[in-house]
Length: 162
Length: 433
Image 1 (cartoon, one colour):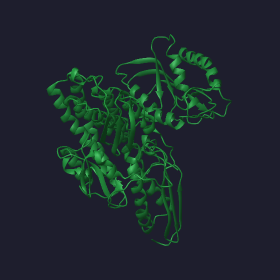
Image 2 (cartoon, rainbow over the protein chains, first blue to last red; image 1 turned 180 degrees about the horizontal axis):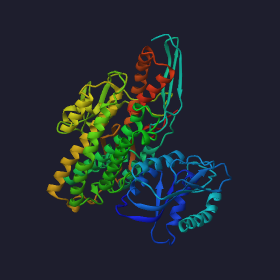
Image 3 (cartoon, each protein chain N blue to C red; image 1 turned 30 degrees about the horizontal axis):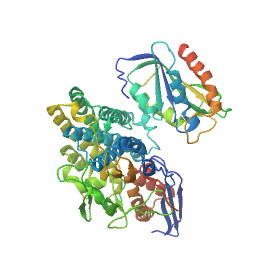
């Protein structure tokens, strides 16, 4: 991926992470694929991070970003399809009690490493959905598919808010 | 061995790609069990490509791995081109070599900095090093991004390249891009490599010598990555078509990864095998780095595979400059590289390529209409599983006699496995029961 980020700035970057070959684990990727088809305000960038969030953050490293929204499957001990919102802006804030992203070590550690390279969005928000099943295979479970419109609405609200 | 009892069971060793278990039981100073187990599920790629047409094969087989996808792509394309009698231009050859160097850098930097060095700095992973060794982590991330961008430039994407195709490339860089890449290599990667050398000099590898048979590609005119003859440190060279006689894959009960052996009980492939077999062909800067780090043409400490990987990084960077100069001088002609017309025919092609972890073999047989009817892939990590277990058998008594306790023995065995940089998911195959 070549984002050519020197001197680039974005009001919001939305990154969907996950593995689309592992059922609901691919929720984040499916969400941003749908989001990318919608009309969004200028200054908003939507990216598929797949399973390489560190590489995405390194590519974004030189960009000025007001808000980074990461969309992912999140195991928070909630019923499948439940939405969680976690503010990850403060790097020292680990473990909010809301459970952890399924890419937890990957996502949080990716952010910690990317910060070393100057990746400092002013605000970082994780929007997660509790998965139902994570097994080999393509496609979300029906329950997670049903949550997509609601999640897209939440992402759009997050894009508009401070 | 001293009279001790040990019961080591590492279920899923960390900081390697894929899943492997370490099982070591010592009773009253006698080694009772010693196993390197591979429980990873088979991947079925050799069956998947059967019935598929020649343009699709490299795209499918590149998915065997996300770290060595360029290597699989390269071996796959070379095997198909040999089977279909397709010649490539000098320009394509140089661009493919540059792409392969990009992957070698990408993989070796990841392994040395993120998987191996944390052990040497007393950390459980690279994450705490972000605070304690910030400059080193910055350098590692910068070098990783450099290598990612190199694969993007020469392969169209940082993993699973999209521009290489049978006979050439669907898109090639411009001369301006090559000039810019040369500048970036000199101004960014070379200084970082020098700083990495200074860091590695402060981190000696654990002492452990066990000679084995070293197998790698060899050419007389260059340090072989892209092609060459298969060379054994014991028995010399054979053409790549004769790979089966060197690899001799066989199945063991505790591993989904096959084992190999040739002239001795086990063999090793990878960076250390390459430097042992081809030391004189390393670039000048690489040889200097080797001298500073104690790597010689006959190094038999498996931990020194980490050092050999770094030395190869220096070599790949310096060799890239040479390849870039050649291409800049001759210019880039898109017509030479873009998707030439191919007439399918029946045939068999065997290609051996040195990927970061060792020799990779892709062997395809095609039907008249260009469909694969048979395929065999021999993966480098496969070839090391047996050697890792033989190393365990020799290393455990040494560690015990050095007075290491159970936790220290376990840690050193894990470090030993990591030094081979195993890519376990690539290495598993269907086992017939």
